[in-house]
Length: 302
Ligand SMILES: [Zn+2]
Ligand SMILES: [Zn+2]
Ligand SMILES: [Zn+2]
Image 1: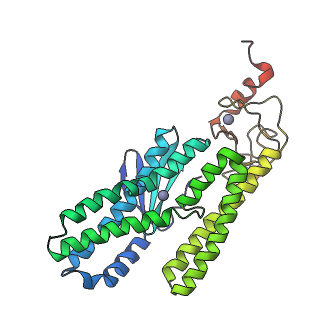
Image 2: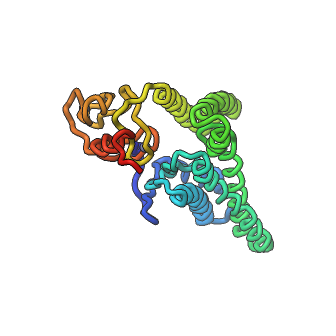
Image 3: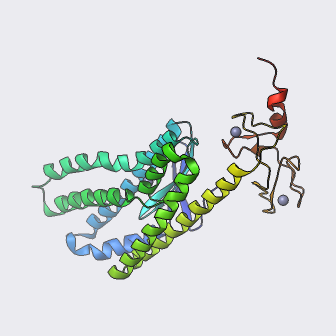
């Protein structure tokens, strides 16, 4: 479940969260400084502008990560991309917890709007470089906010839509519906990329398309899990759900999918033994022995 850290390096660690930076930030530096070099009297101001973009994206991602933690979820890392970041958060599988973890990112940008506006008013009479920088930071934050709120999965707007739909149609249909809507968005972005002849937009569209496809595949996998018959004699020690029958567990060693409860937590191909088994319903990993103890018929009378 770890994100791909390809092309990234670790920058710092804060509140137990590792912050990784993608190499495309260097590309963004070159592009930004080239495009905007005429707006300032010295390149130093372009560097400030670039650092401000970096700070806004970082704050946004910490919004996601800290909100996820506040509802009991896990958030261990953030990968920063110039067009936004990806906070690898695992909120508890409840629509309210998901909604809060996703909405907290754009909320950071919402809070920044009046703050930056006040600074812009205060500095409107300041020398050219200062007022230009503040103006630029104000609009950068606003553009990032609007972009992230587009209802296209996996952008925040799409994920917010998914969490809201979850309240009404459950986790599966909501994910499927938003993933399909995401493909519509991808088609729109692609057309826009051609129209603008923008390589940046094209790259971003490809990134969204891949994530969208993964979301759709996840929805398909979740459907197979929910429709599978449940095994008797075992129950998750955390949520008491009986495990589904089928190859829903993957061997991290040889990548074989197998039914861990039919094989006593041992991979049938490479014989790797797993000390803990992850619940497909609540995500908690516990030793398989605890699962049989938690089976309903073997629970002590209450
Ligand atoms: Zn976000
Ligand atoms: Zn469970
Ligand atoms: Zn194996």
